[in-house]
Amino acid sequence: METAQPVIAAENLHVHFRRGLIGTPATRIRALDGMNLEVREGEFFALVGQNGAGKSTAMYSFLGLIRPTSGRVRLMGGAPELGSAIYRGVAYLPEEPHYHLYMTVGEALRYYGSLYGRRVADAEISSALDRLGLGPFRDLRLSKCSKGMKQKLSRRPAGAPRPRLDRDYEHARSLRSGNAGHARRHHRARPRHR
Image (cartoon, rainbow, N blue to C red; front, side, top):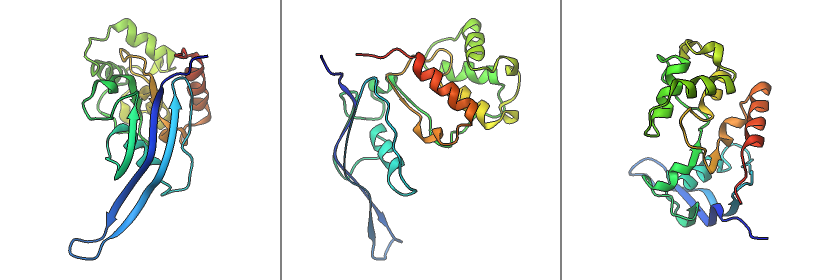
């Protein structure tokens, strides 16, 4: 049986930060110290650890937002360079996303979907809102939405391509039981690439 190509590969990944005021002796913080990880397409993984264990640093390294001190990261077979076409297949929801609170749920879904370079049809908006259980809240301002409603809205905007790599581990800890069930159903329904 042929194995799928890794969507994330980290080899001997080291990320060190300098801590201290300018002009004072600096200490080096080892956020990651020789991390090795391989995640293949269709697999699910979780980064679990205490505060300060390096989970966010690892994610930022995988996304190319932090350059490793040493080691190598591959994202869907390529180097995670900002602006690269490989990001078209990546979805990432940080622990604390920021929303355009002046928009309604429907406006936000249309706007976020349009960021993928295409006009999103009304039918797609309606279908996505129904799928997310947000149909009755189409005209509600995001400033009035619960945290759970905003998280649902962030899952995958209407018009967005289905990502090959869906990274929302950071907000999984804050999902309420209803949203956690929605996330499980969403992942079960997704086709597995082989």
